[in-house]
Every structure is written in structure tokens, then in C-alpha cells.
Length: 102
Image (tube, rainbow, N blue to C red):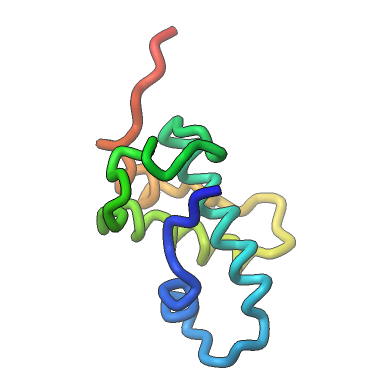
């Protein structure tokens, strides 16, 4: 599974300083990464080499979208109506998404 952001980046985004809850944050990193990869139609179990940025650091817009998804997952832990693919996330990912042809 590809983790798009690091634990340190996630904790900085969520403004967490202690190590308490790191396991939960790591799970949310993986969930946010899977949501993003599914949206841009990349197999979540694929090799890191299969992503468009390869072995390089993910681009800023990919990281920013992942952090927005992570924030939504963290803020709305129990919500059934959480909008993890908000308009801001979709806008950041627009150029990365291969449109479906019906």
C-alpha cells in the first residue's frame, strides 16, 4: 500500500505534537491515500513505481489533497455524511484523474 504522506507531515497538518494516537493517524494516512488513489484510478496495491510520480516525492497537489482527506477523516470520525472528496480535493486532483468514457 502506498502512503502518500508521512506520519510527520500528517501530524503537522493535524497539529498533533504527542505520540499518543500515532497508530490511528497512520491508519488514516493509509485510508486517505487509498481514497485518493482510487479517485485517480490507480490500484492501491500497485507498486510505488506505477504512480505517475514514480519513486519521486509526490507532487504538492497530491500531498495537499491527501492532507485534506486526512483532515476530514480525522474531524468526522463517526459521520456518515463526511465529504472526503470535497470540491477542493477534486480541484486539486483534476489533472491527475483519467476521465471515464461511458
